[in-house]
Length: 180
Length: 131
Image 1 (cartoon, rainbow over the protein chains, first blue to last red):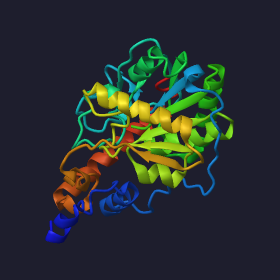
Image 2 (image 1 turned 90 degrees about the vertical axis):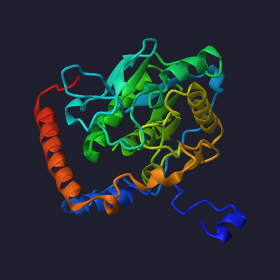
Image 3 (image 1 turned 60 degrees about the vertical axis):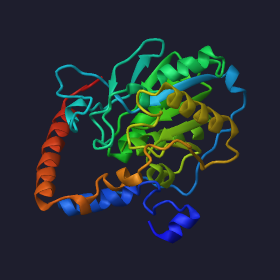
């Protein structure tokens, strides 16, 4: 750190959000894979206004975590990437129950976090506490699991409509989506 | 792909009249897709809902998400959680950083990547997998 930085209390330059797309592009190019992945990108963003107080709203939760599947290899905590634990269709679970959801099937930061506490990626217990405190009206009856597919077509044409269908069925007023 | 998936899902729900909030740790991916509301935690990927084993941090993170949900004035509203992962920001230099890997490590990772891709393909091709 230079004296100039010290004088003004500047943070190091790299103390900013990680440029993941650039890192991933460089990573796979160096590993020898050709065309870089085309990330979904839109100029226009839809916006549905919140029309009633959250204290009177039913809130649904969507996660990309996977139910623990005994027999499908090490799923952590601390497991290496495990493609056998992936899932390819939307699933749903009872919001009133506790669930053992894991993240060994995705590319989380395995160096700096160990996936020991599901509450750090699946805020269902926290959401139930918010309902108990009347911060929200109620938790929707089910939470939903979204498959993390490389294929835009599968996500957009199959998984998104299925999530919408289930969330409408549950008559949720708003949705929290937690990305692992 | 997780951040892309939830961002696309949020967009689809909003386009159909249901308000959403995305919680995540990969700011550039979520904003590149473009979502209505985003609570960004500048934490290692895998911790969108707060610090592990820290209920106060998890409750604060959810509360921030709810506040962004109810108060965002327009689409592409991003709020960054004030929480810090560590006093030392050097952890941000490690994730998929090719400049930090030896040629041997790069070769090892390539072999492992091919192996995992083969496993994923086998599962995907199996009917009704992981229902």
